[in-house]
Length: 82
Ligand SMILES: [Zn+2]
Image (cartoon, rainbow, N blue to C red; front, side, top):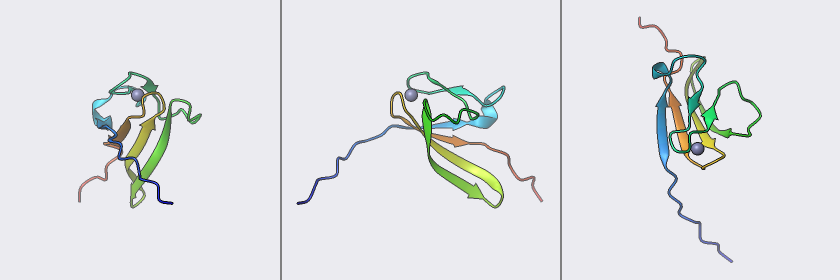
């Protein structure tokens, strides 16, 4: 029996960490839940995907547990040019 995959459009937001002051915590663009990178409880968000470039974290994809939004985090430490 084949189950039809539910085509659910998740809204994806992109958050640029270089535009965030402080310790990197930011409110969910949709529901306003504060997402802190130091929060490892997974109560507020969970990590969906981690993209690493070399030894640097390039991109982090999170899902807000409160509203289900997908949040793409960009703007981590960047390699200096040259
Ligand atoms: Zn949210």
